[in-house]
Structure formats: C-alpha cells, structure tokens
Length: 268
Image (cartoon, rainbow, N blue to C red; front, side, top):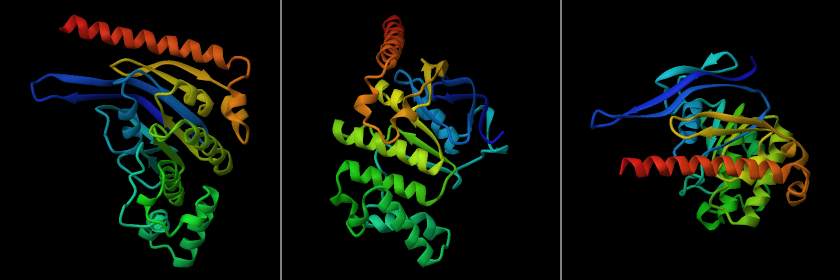
C-alpha cells in the first residue's frame, strides 16, 4: 500500500511504582498517500503519543507502523514534524532556519537557496528572510516552521496542535494556508487538534479517539477540507451538515470528558 499502515499499535508506559499506563490499544489505520487527516479526542487519549510513534520518536510496545511498506523504526526525513511551538533555532534567521535541512543533506548552495526562496514566497515570508525568529509574530513563526518542514520534502507531515497558540484571526489564515499547501504539494498531513471546528475544516478524514486506553472511537469522511481550499472558511462553516456534525462530535467528546471525570471521582 502507498501510504501509512498502522497495525495493532499499542503503547504502554511503565511507571516507577510498578504500575503502568496503557496509552494506546490496538490502533489499526490505513492512511493513503495525499490524504489530510485530523485527530480529535479528550485530554490524555493518546493523540500526541500516536503522532510520536508515527514520527519514530517512540517505539510502540506492540504492533507496527509502515510507510510505503517500509517499517518505521526511528525519525527520518520522509516524515516531517510541526510542533505547537515552532521549535525554531533562535540563533538563526528565517532563511537559515528553513535552509537547515537541505544544508544538513549537503545540498548545493544555489539549489538550497532556490528551495528556501520558493518556500518563503509560498508562505508569504520572502520579505522577512533576514529577520531573527524572535522578531516574528506567533503566526509568522509557525509559517517558518511549515516552510522548514517542507524544505526536507517529506512525504508525510505530522502536526501536533500547530495552530493552538494563535489568535482566532491568525489561526483562520493559517488553516487556509495548511489547506492550500496540502492541495499544492500532495503531501499526506496528519494533524492533532483540540478544536472541533479546526478538525472539521482540516480533515477529509476525521478520527475521534476514545479515552485511555486510546483507540479510534469513530471516523468521519468529510467534504469541508476539499471545499475549503482557496475559499473563505467562514463560509464553509455555513454549509449544510457542518453545524450538525460539529454538535455531534462536541457531544461525543463532552460525554467522554464526563466519563473521565467520573473515573477520577471514583478513585478519590
């Protein structure tokens, strides 16, 4: 299969007091090349743990992950990560941050500069390439992080709440940028978010995860990401079915959070 294959993946963390936490249990997913998938769920359901396994930062305690038939055994350039905070190199300017990956690969300077200039133009930061990253707004820093990820030309882009710290207007603009980059590049994108609206807008597939042990509770296939490419996202939210699906998922996650709180009260 061309894409990601997640087979019977479980993750168990052993604790110092001889207890353990079962973070994930029997996750099975096939994600086709070029899909954009959003992942939602209550706090502590293992969303970021799953993303870290896909990135190769964690090895699952059971099961396997393959990309295009090749086992994922650690980080690699075909899987890029964009974090909630940009994780940029503060001592480098914008151009140097984006050029970091190609530079580490030993790419010719002229080719490297062409790639960086193209990506900065794509994310609207060509005029800021000599700026230090601390001089940029949060939204600009996340655009640099996206460009830096794309500079490595990964097949899969993993995004861990990349827009969570942004104000509402900047977040909406960045959502539009993510959709445009998805459509223009053909990359596979898997995005973790706590926002139901964002998950609806940015996922042609939307996965709702259940409370720990984390597992896929329900999957939706949605038209809104495709419709949102190049469109006013506020208009997309007015489309028939959007509000109904949002309320259904909100109620689902609310019930899960209530279940979690009930567990805590029983423990105490």
